[in-house]
Each structure stands twice: as structure tokens, then as C-alpha cells.
Image (cartoon, rainbow, N blue to C red; front, side):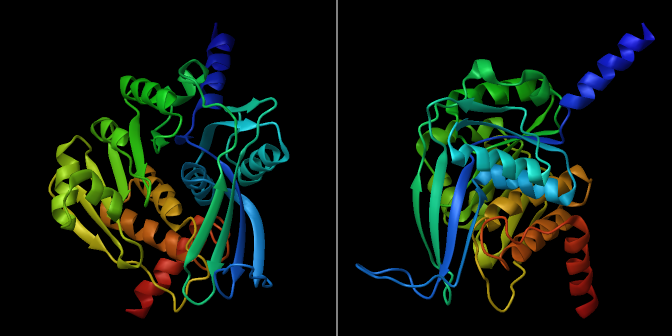
Length: 321
């Protein structure tokens, strides 16, 4: 009986993740250029990289880079892109047991051009043909044993079921409302989330409020216990159920190489801070630092720091004050 108990405990531990993500993973081809192209333009890239991308996917890689156990749920095609996505997760330590492969289908891909001087971006994407994850394909035990479920509304039907599983098991639900990604059906997710982190334009479209505190308050009244609104170089604002409200400035370098993935890494780092039991203020500072460091390399994951690196960065800031 004791042996069976040990085997059962080992089996549960193998399924346990601090955070499990549900979203769409991509291959990103990112090029840094002198200027965004005009018709018939030909120019030499200053730098170019191919790496994994996707909002939830990059948040999971951020968590793994910082030292948390993370897993990803997604459906990939059986093409070279799917293989590269899977290999990228594996290399970073993100669990891939719940990635489904759809034979005869393609995986998502993006081409991103980043202008050297301004940091402005031009993005072209192909969503791929792999059908969504279905509710029946969800890893129920893995979701139920996590600390957080992180999603952004992709794989819609499966997402609703994943939230139901998580809430039934006491797992906190984290929602990513990215810039330029608001759509009315996402309104149904906000009341079912615990941690709601959205871009400013998402918050304004969802709440019809242009004042940051009013928008954060409107989101909080819908159900989450914690709301953060991000606004790029202007930083972020955090509002908690207990009434705490504060602004976290962005940590700005003299120039940014590429801001691709900065919001996604902010999400991952924010969850990491919560996992470690940091105060909200320290959690927001950690998330802002990770996003800032990530902006110093090309691609959405190129500059992601380890926990030791981000602590050293924050310690250096404290010493300079």
C-alpha cells in the first residue's frame, strides 16, 4: 500500500505545474530594419532571428526562464513550424506533454519588421490551419493541480471549460487582454478571472472609460481580485480588491532594440512574483524589469532574463537612487 501511495504521489507531482497556459504558439521571424518597407523596397536587415512567439506561449517561457514550472496547452500542425515551436519550449524547460499535433495541418507563423530608430513594428501573420484544442482534449488533472491557469481567449470552447475546471479546483485564473486584441466575446471571461492584466486600449474598449483608475475599478467590479493595466513606456497601474492602487513606472533604457513580447513577458513575470509571495509593489517592479530587459534584444524572447539577472538589475537601480 505504501508503494502504491508513493507511486500515486509521484504521478501527481509529474502533472503539477506552477502555471499552465492555454493559447496559440507561433514561429516568429523577426527582422530589425533601418525603415519599414515602402512599395518595391529592398533593404538589408540589420539583424534577423527566428524564435517562438505567441502571448501565452511567451509568458510560459518567461516563467520557465525565471525558474517556475510551466506547461503549455496548444494544437500544432505537423509541419516544420510545429517542430520548431515544440523544440523551443523543450529547450526552455516548458512542459510540452499537452501540445497536440494535427496531422496534415500547419502551425501559426508571424513575420515582424522592427524599425531601428523608432521601434515601430509591421507584422504579417499566418494563423495556421491546425484546429483548436477541444474541451475533451484538456488535461484535467494538470489544470486542477496548477497554481494558475493563464489564457487570453484563444481555443475559445476549451478555454471556457479550462476555466470551469480551474475554478472548481481552486486554481486561480489569469487573463491576458493584449493590445489590439479586444473583441466583445472576451467580456464573458473577465468575471471568471482572478488576475486580469490588460493593455490600456483593451481596458478602454472593454469599460468605455479613458481614466486609468476608473477603468481599473470597472474591471475589478466585474469579478477579478487583482487588475493591472499596462501602457508601454508609460508603465502600468495595479488595483487590488483591498483598495491598493499604485503606478509602476516602466524601466526605460536609452533605446529599445525591440519591444516585441514585452507585454507577454510582463504577464509571465507578474505571475512569477505572485508565486513567490512578493508584495504587489515588488511583483509589479519585477514584471516591469523583465519587460525592460527583454526589450534589449531582438525578438519576443531574445532578452528574457533569469531570476538572478533581474534581481541584479533591480538591485543596481536601488543602489543608484
